[in-house]
Image 1 (cartoon, one colour):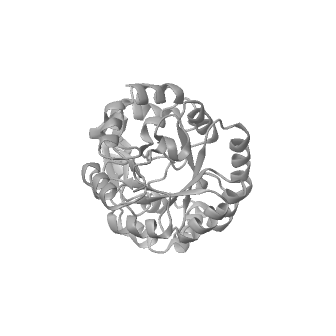
Image 2 (image 1 turned 90 degrees about the vertical axis):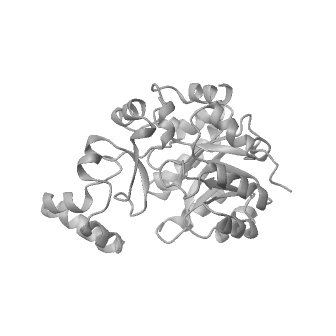
Length: 316
């Protein structure tokens, strides 16, 4: 049985915590501070618009990060930069890749040749067994309490299910906002935890001050699921703006979401023509106006440095 290996052993870090990859939130500065604090950070490759920008970030992390760092790759066809991103990860020999939304087979094969570990997002036992069979090094158990895109099953059910039936380490993603909750995951058999929302309101984060203050002001009861951003349910803060526009896609958004190419063309057209009424109807939710976060913002009381957040999380 290999699933009793702790994340600290797997990545040679002090504390069994991954600072989760957060779209448009995670950055190099946050990952560097994570390394100093004895945990590891992971950044989405899609936070960089070009391969050149992505490789510049990898170069800086390679030179400056005091511990291991990871990259989150979207491995399905929606990510047209995937092949180049994977090649860059292998060339820079990042410590680990977290795969999302698709088959990780190619990623696992290429990464392992370069000595890079691969952890796979999973939401159920069926997919967990598939990626284990493909050679994944660990499972990221995305549970019902996760921020952003979440799974259908609570951590109480998902973590023990995967631990009992799989032979690779299980890292729990979702439901951790303090030391007590982290210990609960570890007691269920998790090798470690992936924590995101706590770090949105960090000093090193580049998001707007308003977004950070929203994480401080709002709590678990203010988190709602919306499908307006991507077509899939995603947890967001229920701000007055979100309340006004609603959380479910309208007919036009549903139609456009089925055809990404058409959606892009029409979006460009609306900007060009200045058809603001149409634009608002079809594209009311963007990552700048709607703020993703999970229920663990309940435990965010101030904007603080990453190092302080980690210290409270691991020590209580």
